[in-house]
Length: 263
Length: 363
Image (cartoon, rainbow over all chains, first blue to last red; front, top):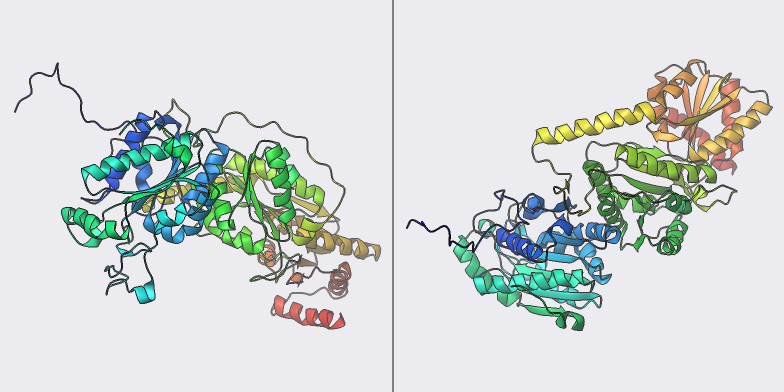
């Protein structure tokens, strides 16, 4: 089909201003791209792109600062919430957020995330949980499902010796100082829409100074799971969601009372 | 030091309690909120240094303080701060070690702070005060140097300075700087985005960074060497000591002078950059040098490298939190004066340990 009527053409889909025009290094079928886009759309819609300072973590998203068109710093492994604390405390009027994976946040960075949440730091944490270490080539993470094979649990995660997955949203929700902690998924369009709305709420929580907000996003890792992108989405739905139930784990009354636009 | 830091315009302090420097954190806990500035008691030294890292990326004057075991935990963050080329001030009030050690004064973190600590090729400015007044002055200087060179500046004190009371004059309160450096990540609208990172995947790019860091360090070496000489003009026995051991050495030198022994002291104030040329110059006319430290001879290596055999270099130190008495150092000066060694064949430290056993037995 040849479109001739450009006069009446309407842009229905374009790159958010908050994303740079750079091809990402993410593997085909990885949901990092989706998560990036959602964060970018939300910051665009809130007009916060030029008022944001992102904190990149260590893992596959180490280069996320290349893809977000805004000020960024890059943290040591697991330390993004501490670094974000440092930034936010001297620039309280900026939108400060971390973008972390499950190895970074739930393993090496457990102390930093717990205490940033415990202090009620007015930052937003975007937490991608794909149950595996991606960047180093598919090792077991604290979030790896029981029986799941990884390069460091070749026979499958043995819960007798390697314990059970850590459920970060549930854990952080128990802390009195957190304002908004929810889990969403990126495995189909309906869930992606919910994820975007949650991200919008989380950033609005920060905007209104209500305290710590985190959105956990169940994500795929086709390369290291050893299955194709489509199967990966099914894996999220069939295996990840039952282990990591989607839902709102902590929503302060003040957050419930907010009227959140968009999405 | 805390009061000096905030008067120097420190806008954020992040720390974790550890003896013998907790008073510094406590002072900040009271004063920073009074001034409307940031104070966070972090969950660990790891978190504290990473909070410093984040705040340093905004171009503000920021700092942390700790003591030896806590500083060990900060090494990761220091390496990142160095690799990202952002300014930060660290106060290390050293205590006895290794391990948990004790809370008594020591200087055993010299290697860690002067020769590395964190991973990768980087150097940091290290300043060693020997009095409360100097601790104040060097804290202010540390902020200036850190900012000027986008470098880490360490004030390396020890437990005795950390717990000492002495008359001293505080600097006037500086007004806070307006605006941010051109590299600072501030989330400021209306300009191209800024990023600060320490990752350079291409080895050539990392090497470019290494070269930039090294060139900046050479500039620091050329401009920022600091030391104080005492009675060096005609000194035959030249002592070299920093911080508290330098102060003890000075007492011994004065007593030796009273006995007619031409002793002198070179006290490095900047341990890094090290006053190599000054030490070398002092060695030319000396019959012997004596390095005095509260460790097993960590600066000794740097002194020997500077002296390059121009004169014998002997050593006296106490370890584990023991502060040497002026009399112990005086005995060493007398020994070197009575029998100036032609050279120190054999193991300097082995001979020192033999002498130390006698001192310890005498105690």
